Image 1 (cartoon, rainbow, N blue to C red):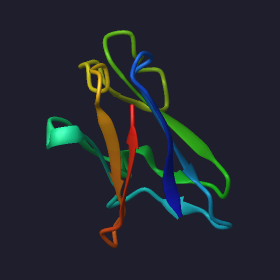
Image 2 (image 1 turned 180 degrees about the horizontal axis):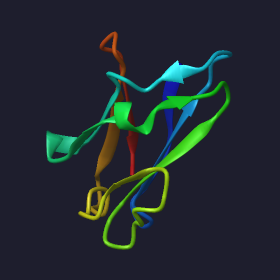
Image 3 (image 1 turned 120 degrees about the vertical axis):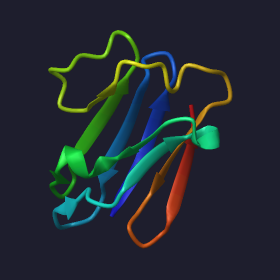
Image 4 (image 1 turned 90 degrees about the vertical axis):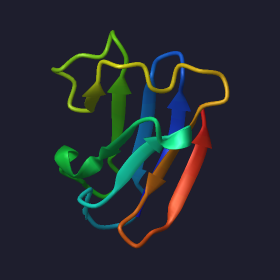
Amino acid sequence: MVVLLECNRRAEEVTIANIGGAPVSLADHTLRDEGLHHEVDLGGFGSLAAGQTLVITSGPTASNDDPGFWTSDHVWNNDGDAATIVTPDGRSMTVRC
């Protein structure tokens, strides 16, 4: 089961984790900001092993070399932003940044 652990607006990072006991493909999982200004299909990030976390990075200081690099655009930098992950079965979880 993939969940959101944290959204850090200053660092422009969202941490997701597989809290289940088996690997989970991120295919058909999406991550979006409040108001749907930005959305990414997490399938490009592969899979998460049981207990593994992944930090999704954005903003002008994010690096293409980072395994969780999403975009160099600002995404989580505003007060009141929220990150939402939507799973393939339609469940969602939101964390304030």
